[in-house]
Length: 371
Image (cartoon, rainbow, N blue to C red; front, side):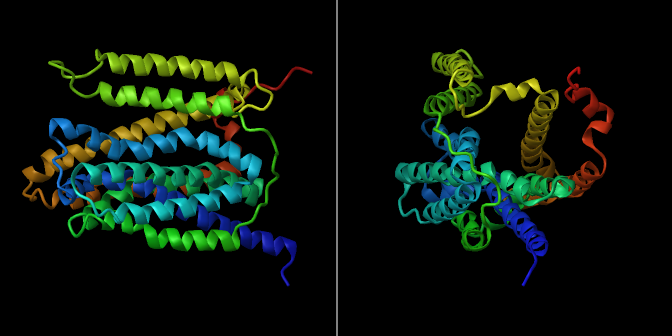
């Protein structure tokens, strides 16, 4: 018989390994389509660059990302109410089911494109459930002195997944575009069974009423802003970009207004979806700003490098265009290695040295109240 300490010590590594796989498969699927899109559209018989088909191209890329971004906060709140492990396990199952349905498309043309977009959005629902609750599961499972290492490894899996997806997409897409979606199925089945058998609720649940108006206004506002930005970077009439498009302006202005309404609702309801008062904590605010800026820099660099490698550098150095997707992914590997090294190291340093002891963190830390 294992003692409670021994059982807890073993369980925390089970939680880390399972949630790391979950985060990894979600983020791999965020980038795997970037390189595989030409093969996917060729497989369903659509020219994605034709004027009437640009929307298919954008929403096949953006649908998964938008729904994941919109639902993460709401699903995190549902995890607090109904159980983080329960929501996480459901996410693995949902993600796996829609990975199968993405590869099972039997149609061609517009119908196939719409099917892929809808299934991709629903796959994103599963991804949001996984991302929203994986960190909370680790926080519950690990003691404070090891939490930084666990979260660092989990975060590295998320960052590395966005680069690994490029390589996997470059390898599989030329063989068969359906493999882009099928590659997630064995991992999803394994992770789902493992999660349901081994993960348990180790944190406290806080039963509460769901903040429906907060969830609705947050989702509508964020989706509107993201849709406006998406169509704003497209040509409109004789203009290179669409910032003068009335629909774009309506989406962005209306989305901001709805998000302002969300902020007002959250300060007035007794059980808000998100406690905006957390932003009064300098450490919390600075940490979120740093994460946002890091994600913007990483995503922008990744996107520009992919275009530059595939469209300019690799062809100029003798690579056939059919080979550029794979080699573009390979040339991104050094950047991935840097993240793989830095994540666990920074987590261990955070466990050993209090974050507030470093000068930047000290400047951001909340000041103690006067006695």
